[in-house]
Amino acid sequence: MQREKPNLSDYKIVVDDVSGGEIANIVKGYISVGSEKIPFKGIAYGRYGGQNFAPKISPQSKKRLKAVFGDVSKFEEDLQQKIVKGDFEVDQAAAEAAKKKEEREHQHTHL
Figure 1 (tube, rainbow, N blue to C red):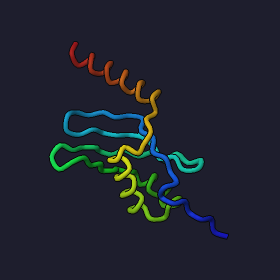
Figure 2: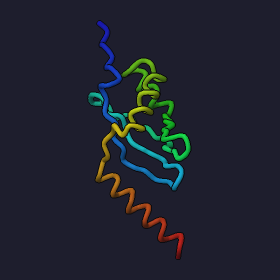
Figure 3: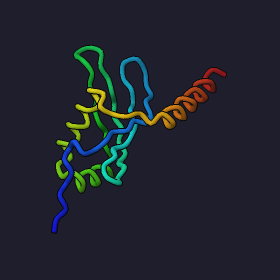
């Protein structure tokens, strides 16, 4: 008996790190579906022509996504749309830790 795959709407996006500059940001996080946490990263950018997000998913994460959802390209498109619309949660503890780390690293460059 084959297990039914979840719908694309049956997952949660959690962002735990954002770094970058004025034009583009590197976004890191994970997809939570059932008991799985599948990491992703991508580039969020936009000024002219609107906001956009380009997911960069590792081959290992793609294998896990394929096992969960089947069609990885449809998943990536859905992920992109959800990020652009702001349909995600922020892991506050991880975000604060990343911010502190970035501040420490920034201080070292000015010594």
